[in-house]
View 1 (cartoon, helix red, strand yellow):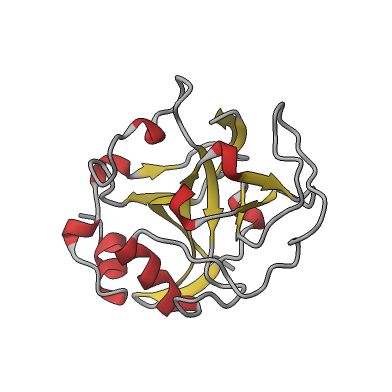
View 2 (tube, rainbow, N blue to C red):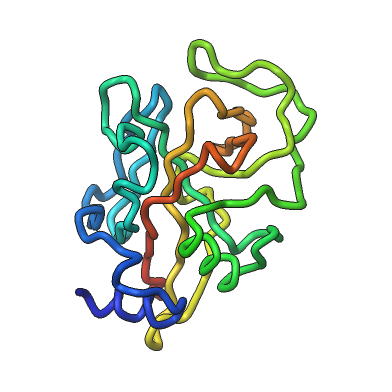
Length: 196
C-alpha cells in the first residue's frame, strides 16, 4: 500500500477494505488522452494524476458498467467536492461521504437546470436539462477539492462511471449533468500533488 493511499485512508477514516488496488492507475501521458467510454468522450487525466481504485466489483448486480468497451460500459466523468454544497456536506466531509456510501447526491446549486442541452453524441438527450449532479468529462474542469495529506497539498476528485442514457451535455467546457444518483458509480479517487 502506497504512503499516499495510507494518508488518504487516515484522513478520511477509510479502511483498507474500501479500496481495490486493481483499480489503481498512474496516468503517464503528458497531455492526457481522449478515449471513449459508453459512447462519450473520456478525457484521461494527464501526467501527474494518480488514481486509487475503490472496492466496487460485485457491489451492483453486474460489472459490465466498468468495461472499457463492448456496448454496456458506462461513460467516465469526474466529480469534486470543492466547488459547492451538496447534501453530504462540503469539502472533506462530502468527500468522505461519497467514498463510504458510493453515492453522489444532487446538489443545491443547479445553474443549468431548465436550459437546452448541447448534445455532441448521436441520440444524446435533447430535453431540458434537469436538476441533477454536475460532472466534468475532464478532471481539469472539475470542482477539485484541495486538501492536505501528510504535509503535502493535493487536488482530489472522484472518477465515476455514469449511465450514458442519463447524461445531459451543457455545452460549457466539458460539464455534464446526470439526473439521478442511481446512475452514478464512483470507482476511483484521483489525486494530484500541487507543486510550485
